[in-house]
Every structure is written in structure tokens, then in C-alpha cells.
Amino acid sequence: MNDVLAQVATSTETSKNAGNAILYETVLTIMNVESENSLRVLAVNILGRFLLNNDKNIRFIGLLTLVKTVHKDMTAVQRHRITILECLSDGDPSIQRCAMELSFTLINTQNIEMVVRELLRYLESTDAEMKALCSSKIVLAAETYSPSIRWHLDVLLRILTIAGNNIRDDVISSTIQLISNSPQHEQRFITDKMWEAIMNMNQLENRQPLVQVAVWTIGEYGESGGFDEFELIEHYRQLLWAPQLSITTKQYILVSLAKISVRIDGCTPEIQNIINAFRVHMNIDLQQRANEFSQLFTNYKHLRTSLLEKMPKLKLSELTTSEYNADFASGESSEVEQQQQEEPVPAPEPSNQDILLDLLGDCFSSDGNGNNALAVVPVTQPAAPQSYLQTSFNQTGLSTMNNYNNNGPMAPGTDSFLDLLGLAAANQTQPSQQQTINYTPATIPAIEVYHKDDIHIRFLVHPQQTTVHDREAPSTTPARITVQTTNGSQATIEKFLFQAAVPKAFVLTLREPSGTVMPPGGTIMQDLLIARQTGQSGGAAGGLRMKVRFSYEVENYSMMEQIDVNEFPSGFLR
Image (tube, rainbow, N blue to C red; front, side):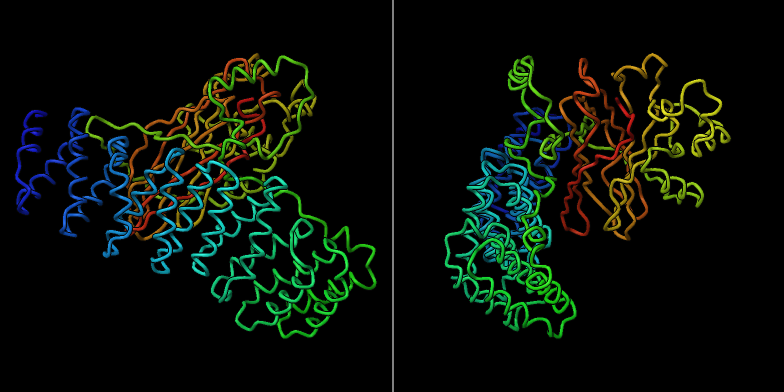
């Protein structure tokens, strides 16, 4: 079959649409059968020639097919990266959108600067709806593959400037989060850049997210900025009285103004006058803020400095540069770290920056035809008493065991209920405190990972087969977690891809999912096998933490979410 496909692909005339149709079907056949690597490269090259065709329909078909088959041979598609990026400037919006989706798929640490540069150019000319989608995807790509903090800050500033009011809230929070965790010299750099942006840019009412991030940055790090304080206060006055700015933006400005009073000396009276003017504002929230801040200048001035001090560093959730990638070092760096650990050093305190910060690449395997089987599981609602118990006892690690358990039957109801109430300890020979600390499989709850936008993801944690001796030592036996993803919407979800990563102290194996398509009410199940590395103790390596990313398509829209899962049961894999 490979010989026949190769002969058809190389000898078909492409001067007419009939020949292009034959080549298109040939490419689909090559990508969906067990073909040789060289044949897949030939198929990708045919699609690359489609992108150079003068017919926009053929260009669209080529891009759409590359989007569907890019995971089959990423290296071959990367060779056509320049041609794909040129399609971002095509006059057809459909071709632009396909090129944008394919461009994000091709991003890696080597080409991110070039690809993001072209995507920012596309962002300048696209419509409002695509600006929101494209800007969020650029932010996610920058967090994942950013070569440096300076470059990352520049990209976020350009997104805020170009996309204006069309960006989503996650761009604002990601920018503030990055600035909060940047070194001091980078904070000084971005403070000056933000000040220049709001001073020299017209139509700020169309870029209110930029104003919000800028005033937050100046309020936190204003003492390091190279600007005149009286010019700053006057510009803030103009912004506060601008009728085009929203109430949310003015809330940012008012809080920033109060913080500047303790960052910059000599301008306190002017700031107090501006704040007092808002004590009679028509908006109740601005009026309340102004009255509270006014008290800090009069009756409670001794508390103003402490109440308006800098915010602590915000929790890192998605930064993935090498600077914050301590849990995912390569083999060589791990050896160096082991040599350094031989020297006696004080144990550092746990830090949010040590959280796993890198996602694995292609985590799934498929059959010979590249297909996955679809399993549709009816959505079941748990009984009210069980739901109440799970909600009430999850925080303490005490909960009934989930019914989704293939390892054995549940414990008797009477004993489980006594365990939940803490009454079973009286029948044990060990102290009650010891019973609380020891790992008990029957008390592991199901974990609610994500419930938003009609997507519901749960971790069904299966009990480990342990002995009394195993409970006193760190567990090296694999534990099984079943990922249950349910589609609660009325639309079909396609191309669902679940990815996960854990710290280097653990080994994670992802089993093949039950499918990639979820009809309304459908469910996809996938097993994760997790074990602790040999020689890694629970006290030194810490408990299990996981970073989860999943993507899917619904009604021709591509969506991606990335979250942290840290609330595993206290005794799990210790």
C-alpha cells in the first residue's frame, strides 16, 4: 500500500482541481493508515504546496488538514512554518484563523520569538472577537515558552496596547502576576514602560486594561520609577475625572493613588484633596473607598503606611520559564543538584515557585490507525447524602470512598460511617492522633478538579494496596487516579486532549483515554498511574502536586485551560 500511495502522490498532475482532489484524498489516507515516516513527510509537503496555491479554497483545505494532522509529524510541519505564518496576512478571515490555530501548535522554545512576533502583527489587524481569543493564547504560549522575563513583559505590554478593551480578564491577572514575581530591576523597567504608555498614548478609554495594569504597577513600585511626582498626580486627576473610563478602572486608579502617598514623598496634600473630592461621588463603591482612604489621612494616619504597604508576591500558577522550573530539571541538572545536596545546607521553606511548572508534550498513544475508541458514559448525579459527606469532609481528608473503584469492594457502611465521625478510634489499640496521621485508603475522597463552562473534571482516587509495613515508609507502588471528564453542554466537544505533569520526585504514566469526542452528556475516562521515585522520601520531596492542561474544540472554537491540582489527600503517596 505504501508503494501505491507514494506513486499516486508523486505522479498526480496538479494543474486541475481533479488532481488536487486526488492528492487531498491521498494525504488523508496516508495520515490515517500505518504508513512509513517518509510517506508522511511527503503528505505534509503536498499540503505545503497547497498553501502556495492561488486558489484560496485549496489554501484553506491545506491549512485545515494540517491543523488536524499536525500531531502526526510535527517535525515535517515545522519545515513549512514560514509559509504558515505568511497565511496570517491572507485576505480571507477563514484562512487567517486556521493559520493562527496552526501557528500556536508549532510554538516551542526555539521559535517562540519569531512566531509571537508574527501573531502580534496579526493581532493588530484582526477583529474584536479574534483579538480576545488570540491574545489569551499568546499569553499562555508566553508563560509556557518565554525565554526571559524581560521578553515576557514586553509581549504582555504589547498585547495590552494592541488588543485594548478586547482582551479577557486572564491577560490582566497574568500580567500583574508576572510583574509581582519579577526581580526588582525588571519591576523598575516595566514601571517606566507603563508610565510612558499611559502618558504618550491617546484614546486610553479604548485601552482600559492597559490603564488598570499601569496604575497597579505604579502604585506598587512607584518609588522606583523615573517620573515627576506632580506630573503623575495631575495625570491621575485627569484620568479620574474622564467620563469615558469605567468605574472598575477608576477603582484601580483610586487605590493606586492612595498607595502612591506612602511611596513618594511631597505629594500627600494633593493626593488627599483628590481623594476627598470622591467622598460625594455618585457611585457608592468609589464613595466608600474615598471615605475609607480619607480616614487614613486624618484619624488613622499612623496606620496608613502599614495598611498601604506593598502586596506580597502573588501565587505563581502558570509561569513556566526555566527560572521557575526547579521541579522539572533535566537529567544532567539533576545530577548536579544531587551533588549540591550532599553538602549540609539548611532546608528551605516551601515556596510557590517550586510548584511543577512544565507540561509534558504528547502524552497519549493511539492504535495503528491513529484512532481512539469513544466511550459514552451516562451522566449520573450522586445521591444527596453522599454529596453532603464529600463536601463536608474533603478539607480534612475524611470522606466516603467513591463508587468508581475497580480494586475491590467498599468497606462496610457501619465502619466507614464510624470513621467519618471519629468514633472508630475507641476500638483501636493505637492513640487517636496516630490514627489520624496514618494512611487509610477508605478515606480518600474524589477530587473536584474543574467545573466551569459546562466542563466537569473529577479525579477518582483509587486506594493503594498497602500493608502495615508499607504505611510506615514512603510508598513506591503505583497509585491509580481515574480522570472523569463530563460534557454538560448541548454541543459536541471534539479533539479533547488531557495532559498532566508532576514533580520529578514522582513518575507519571498516562493511559490511553476512552476517546477524544464527547457528545452532550458524554464522558471520557482516562487512568493515571503515579508512583514515587525510588529513594525519594515523603518528607524531603513533599506531597503530590500536579499541573493539568486540557484542550478541546467546540463549534469550531479551540479552547485551552491550565490549572494546578494540589489538594490531594494528606497521606496519598507519602
